[in-house]
Image 1 (cartoon, rainbow, N blue to C red):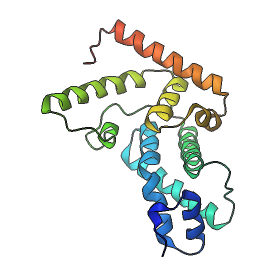
Image 2 (tube, helix red, strand yellow):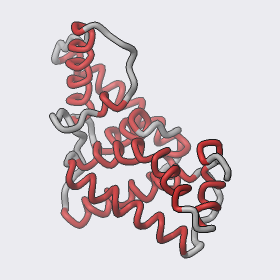
Image 3 (tube, rainbow, N blue to C red):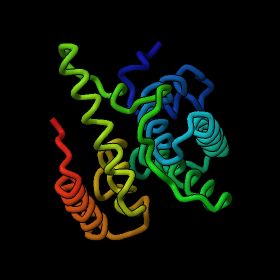
Image 4 (tube, rainbow, N blue to C red):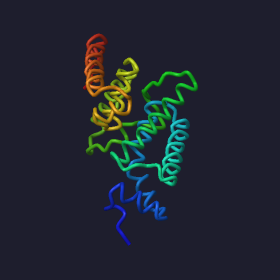
Length: 195
């Protein structure tokens, strides 16, 4: 029996298509946090994020089983594109604009990111800083907010973001640049102290 943890995404897909359900479970476990977090930050609703996340993996399974998945690029980029498109479709259907989650008792993106053991004071300061940053990101224009979420929370490269949002790499870089400029300006205008 092959050790699933040591297999690449492509090898896991091949094993899954040969009937090994555990291979797909490993693939899901490997990427679910990144995909779910990105969906959640776009829709700002845990139940809706859960629904879209399930739809994404149903579509992934369906595409894999039909043999329509091509091996160009990485699995996670392909999965993120499906998740992103499903979020966009949801907003189109409901004529809503995506907004990033500011703070929720149920789910906090920064709890997902592993942190070194901090003192209680440091954890409180980090939590307050993260909440302030989330609020500032939420105030950005949609295109800038989108690139910040995809870059910093979904950990995507500018090349991946450009392909996903169907703009040039320079446009993605420009949107990030303007997002940072706007966040700095808001910090100065509101005299926000981040530490």
